[in-house]
Image 1 (tube, one colour):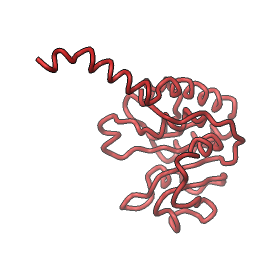
Image 2: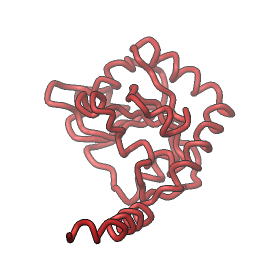
Image 3: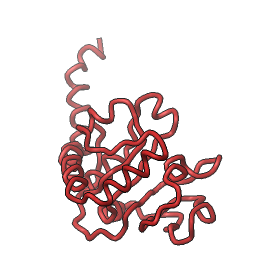
Length: 181
């Protein structure tokens, strides 16, 4: 599991869909292009979005890290995507456990092993049409979305950086005699 330092935030839902991340050198992120023009309360934060998304979607270039848990929890859906090399190597974006621990629900592109790691608590899409279907479905099915978010939150909150560091230290201590030989 990937550790997180985010904490659950009990806040009201203010947004339907949120994305936090910079654009790429070649323009908008794939998940934003795939989403298309939807009639929901959408906010996007990150560098380079001004002028690439409708003005009412643009949240700004920066969102304070110390308050991201509140933002994630205040959205019905938080979008996530992976760089091509992350997806190819099976490296799950650390944003996912951050969102889950905060009380948010994630819709993401697919990464091998992610479903097992998060016990199928992440909604995954493969095509633009499927993304729009997944967004529509979970925006109109609060109980199912909230149940999956709670399931993911329980998993994510079990793995924090302190516990991960202690596990590494214990492992080093268990093999230290063989390292010094």
